[in-house]
Amino acid sequence: MKRQSAFVALALLVPLAAAADPVTLKFASPAPPMSQVNTWGITPWIEDVQKAAGPELEIKLFAGPALGNFNNVYDRTINGVTEISFGVFGSMGGEFPRTEVSSMPFQTDSDVEASVALWRVLQNGLIAEEYARVKPLGLFTFPASGFHTRKEVKTAEDLKGLKMAVFGRLGAREIELLGATPITMTPADAYQAAERGLVQAVMVGWSAVLPFKLHEVTNFHLEASLGQAPAFVFMNKDAYARLSDGAKKAIDKFSYEALSRRMGEVTDKQDELGRSTVKNIPNHTIYKLPPAEADAWKKLLAPMIQEWTKAVPNGEAVLASYRQELANVRAGR
Image 1 (tube, one colour):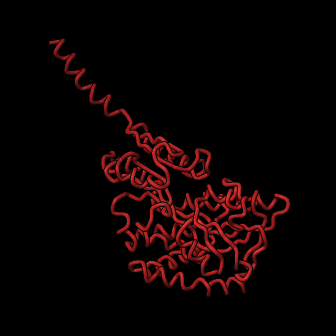
Image 2 (cartoon, rainbow, N blue to C red; image 1 turned 60 degrees about the vertical axis):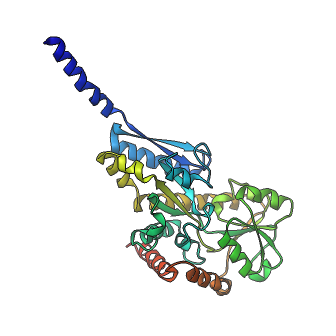
Image 3 (cartoon, one colour; image 1 turned 30 degrees about the vertical axis):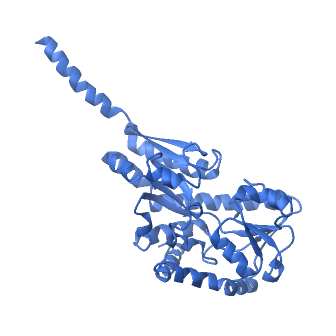
C-alpha cells in the first residue's frame, strides 16, 4: 500500500513540475542588437511583460537577422518561426496600403502622435482587414523624412536636377513632385552612393543618419514633415491563443496603444539624438522649411495625397480618421 501511495504521489508531482515550466516566446527584431528600437523599446517591454507574467512566461529577443530580416520577418511570424516580431511595412510591398496613411506629408512631426493615431485607426476598424493573418501588439512610426544634402536646399527650385536616394515608393513619388530625381535603394547603400556622387542628397529621418553615417557624406540638413514610415510589433495568432490567461493578461497590459505610444516615444528620442549630435559636428547646417515654402510644397505634394486616397480602398475615410486621431492625441484625448 505504501509503494502504491508513493507512485500516486509521484504521478501527481510530474504534471505540477511540467506546469511550472515557462512558455518561451521568440521575439525577432531584424535591427542590430544595439539599435535604440531594441535597447530603448523592445527590451524594456519584454522585461515589463515577464515581470507581470511571473515564472510562466519567458520572452527571448533575437536581434539581427537570426530569425528573419526586414523582408521576411512578417512571413516568419505567420509561419511560427518566431512568435513575436518587429518590422517595417515598407519592406512588404503593397499588403498594407491603408497603413501607409502615416506616410502622407505634412500631417505631424511627432512620432507619439502618429503612432497612437495609427493604432486608433486600426482599433476603429478602418484598416483592420489588413491584419487578419497576425495579432498586432503595436503600431508605430519612424521620424519624418528630411533632406540631407551636399548643397543647401531651401526651396523646391533648389531641388531641381538633384539625384536623391529614397527608400520607398511613396518617398520616390514625393521627390518626383518636388522636381528632383529619386534613386531607390536601401539605407545601407546610401552612404556609398553619396560618397561616389551617384546621388547628391538622401531623403530619410534623423533616426537613420547616425547608424548609416550619412553625416559623413552630407553637410546640409533640411527638416520637413514629409511623412512617417510605419512599423509594427506582431504576434503569431496561434501562439497567443495557446498562452495561459495570466500570460495573455501580461502581454495585453503592456501592448496595443500603450506599446504604440512607448515605441513612438523611442523614435522621437532617436530623432532628437540624431539632430543634437549632428548639430554639434563642425561644418553642418540644420534648418527647417520656412512656412511660406512649406505652403508651396504642400501644393506641390497635394496630387500624391489625392492619388493615395483614390488608389487605396476607403482611402478618404482612413485619412480623415487618421487626422482626427492626430488631433485627439495632440489635445490629450
